[in-house]
Image (tube, rainbow, N blue to C red; front, side, top):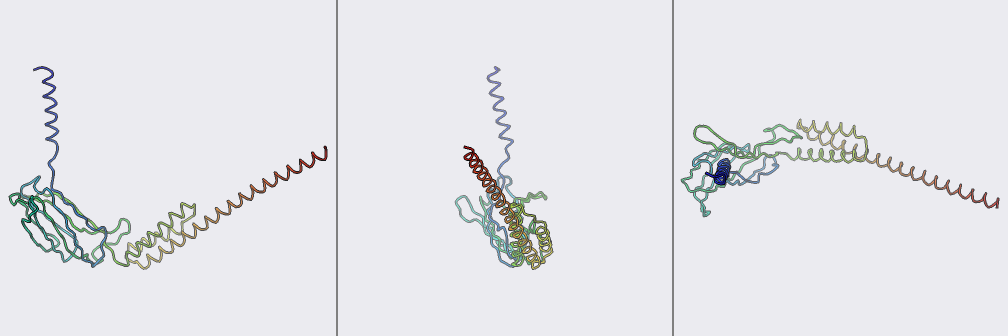
Length: 261
């Protein structure tokens, strides 16, 4: 066997190993879950299951959510887009069996449910409190499972959203004041108190402290701007006085020269 043939075999072997190392495309879940949801509001979102049988010919989709009064609708389609099966299941935790023999190549999973009341989670400003909007798991016989996607969302109430907005406004005001060179120690203290009240669910007091923080920051920024203005005016006056002194000296020198002449 010559070297040229050996080289070709080596290249072919490398290519074969590289192809074998590339994992097969796995089932995927996609969908636009809301970033935030109001307590007590009803939500509806459709997720798409693509490439359901790339890894397994039979498996079970397990779906869970923190929403309440939940209904799941699962619809499968063939290559031509024709509906194959439709199932409606209720509950926060459900299962649906997939089989390649059905001819399905895609599925749509629609969840309809209600955001739970605020006593179902703990309040947190940063990171914000979250609940599981939908979680999808691929399970196989024997107990093996793989989490496909988890969608989380931030729940809120009218009062909590007002407090969050007030805190955010205070943070922006403090940052602006700091950029202006102002001292914002008091504003930061009020802001921290506001966040602690938020975390404790006392939104009225959180708003009050956040507004105090914003006001203190704005006052500090205005004071810093006035100080800068005074410094600039003072510097300008010094320059003018120096110029005036220079002109006076020049005129004096010129008068003295004229008298001597």
